[in-house]
Image 1 (spheres, one colour):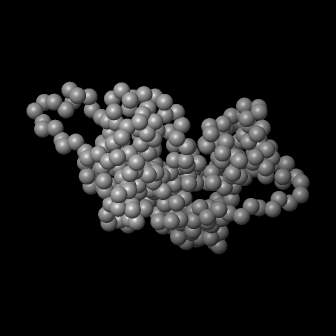
Image 2 (cartoon, rainbow, N blue to C red):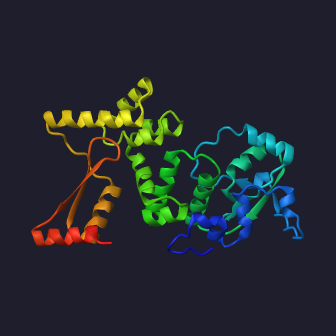
Image 3 (cartoon, rainbow, N blue to C red):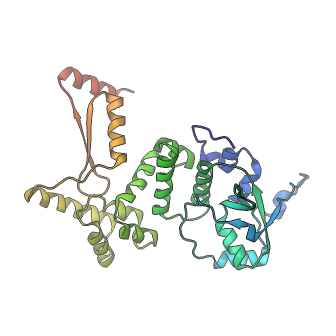
Length: 303
């Protein structure tokens, strides 16, 4: 499948990305029997493959597969109602890699099914990652850390801008950028988010803290809210100003990219710095004279 330079939007579903309506079955609930009646000719059922010929996808954004019991019970009673989207494995003619539907495949294994319905499509790694991410965002709770890692892979491995990613997955650009920033936290804090002990909001409030792991543990012990953590961040900031000079942490690639976008848009030198905790930031623009200031004000207030 050819890859277009600009991803297409999530609002039109997986079929929009693949150009095939039957892909919708991999992410959308199956309609009730009466919904398929009314004179329409039923569509041809998807082909099946032995479950052993499928293997987990290397581009799968989800790293944990828990709470499968209810899905396993459903598969035992009704079978696998929705096909699994797979792609051929280049160096293994009889094997297929799962692109979307790994939870259903794992549940089918536990339910001891021999064959599963599939939709087979050839595609590259970028499309496989996008489709796997979209399915997880649509169907089940994906941890913020897994989501962030998928966004980073799309950005670093496939040269997708945060605007492109936001358009593909149906999220805002700030959501994508702020989610990726979670990967600046220490690995133990990321694990707290992954296993649900910390919310994504609490984790974002820890960005910029001198010892985020200690603050994360305090948040758990004292049951601190996001607002509590942001308030503590303001206190730490004031204490830092009164003490020894604080060495600034190096700016993330995302922060530098935002500075560059602002500079290109306004034609001014820009500096973006964290303030306190979380997402509070200070933007500084270097303006040489009042004429330039008037031009900037005019541009910012223009409608």
